[in-house]
Length: 209
Image 1: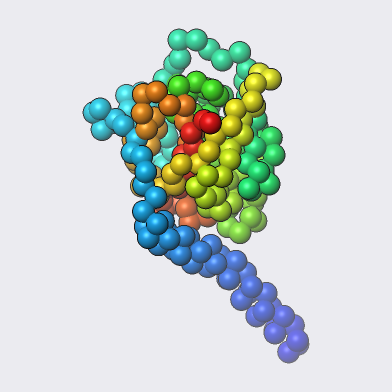
Image 2: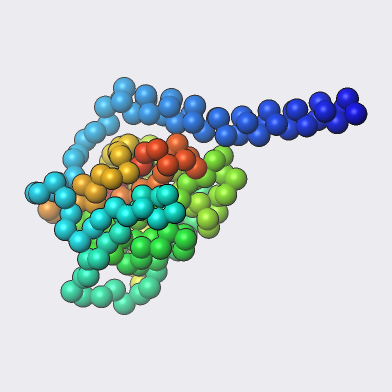
């Protein structure tokens, strides 16, 4: 009986550490971001808001919802996202979707692969990878650093983006949807932080090279 109690206690401690560890790691990561002052570019928004995009609470989760419609529709329903640093290979990104349960989703109306503007992609994170995979494809997004590569494949075309900025914002900050400038081709990857929790949003911004 004593061994069973010790076993249950050990299991409980391990489980607790699995939950606490991401929070501690995120705090260290956040401090590092501020110390490195990596804020190189700032998304532009003339009015401070994005017309056609709102933040809606779905199942106690603040989610960007877009009603934007592009003039020319994409000739594909999804494209592939590869991030070598995270060993993420050819994950599906669903075009013009507000449904995070699908996996990775491309914000309706944002730039398509290779286009000028900002291609905005959202995905869930997870506590220590417990739900990693299709349910939480951005579980390790905090591991990305400046100059890491992000690869996109769409309609047999390949595009390479390089990380230029990493920032932490409030869940209601829709300004991150805007492109940093009018000429560049950008990609933004957004997920919840600390991993698996819903306090802030991590946004990784890449520029096409």
